[in-house]
Length: 302
Ligand code: SF4
Ligand code: SF4
Ligand code: FES
Figure 1 (cartoon, protein in one colour):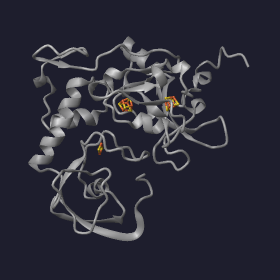
Figure 2 (figure 1 turned 45 degrees about the vertical axis):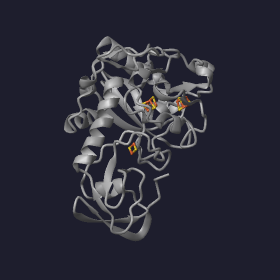
Figure 3 (figure 1 turned 90 degrees about the vertical axis):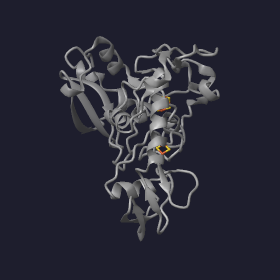
Figure 4 (figure 1 turned 60 degrees about the vertical axis):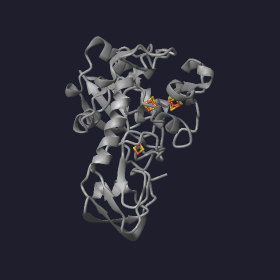
C-alpha cells in the first residue's frame, strides 16, 4: 500500500523532466511528479488504495529502463532521470485513453478524464462507429463497446457496466483495502472480463453489505447512487447547483466525516474525504445511505 510508505526524514533526489526534486525515501515517482508540479493522469490509482497497476495511463519514461514504468507504484531511487512528456509517453497515454474511450461510456467520468483525452489527442472515434458488445466478430468499421443494460436491482445504488474501465478500484475497496466483504471480483477474460458478484447474482442476493465504498472510488460513474442515477435520467442532475457540506456521521462513535452533496435543499449523495485518518474516505451503509430521515422530518413517525 502506498499510504505511509514514505520514510520520514530520509530523502531521495530525482530528476523530473530535467528538474531536480527532493522527496522522502519510499515515495513513488508520481509523488515526485506532484512535488515538481507535474500532473500525471491516473485512473486505477487512488490515494486510499494500494496501486494495482492495471490502467497504465500514468506511465513515464525512466532512463535505463527498456519499458515505460507506472509512476503510481514505482518507488523513487537516487538519481532517477524521469521524463513525463516524451513522445513515447504521450503516445502510450493517448492509446490507453483512446481505447478505453472507444469501448466504454466515459460521459459521467470526472472532468479531468475529458481534459486528458483532449490533451493527449485521443481520438476514440477513429476506431469506428460505437456498436453494442457482441461475442461474434464485430462488423468491419465498428468499434465494439461494453454497452449493456444498467443493473437496477436495489434501492441504494445502480451499476452501469457500460461505463466500467476495469480499474479494479471497486474490487479493492470491497476487499482487503477497506471493507473486507469480497462481494465483487473480476470474472471472465479478455473483452469478457467484467466486475461480477459471486455467480453474477443480483446485488441483494450477493454478499454486498451496501457500504457504498465501491461507489466512492469508481472514477467513471459506473457505480452511482440511485438518487443521482434517477436525477440524471430525469435531466435534473446539476452539480453546478450543488453545495457540499462537511459534517460528522450521527450514527456511532467512530466519527466519520460525511460530505453532504445538496441540490434543491435535498441530499443527493454522500461522500467522505480521502484525507481523514478515521476512515480515509470509506463509510458504512448508515453513513453512506442513511440520510433519508433528514429529508422527511415533517412526515417521519418516530
Ligand atoms: S457496496 Fe460495499 S459490500 Fe457492496 S459491493 Fe460495494 S464495496 Fe462491496
Ligand atoms: S465499476 Fe468503476 S471502480 Fe469498478 S472497475 Fe469499473 S470503473 Fe473501476
Ligand atoms: S494509475 Fe498507474 S497504472 Fe493506473
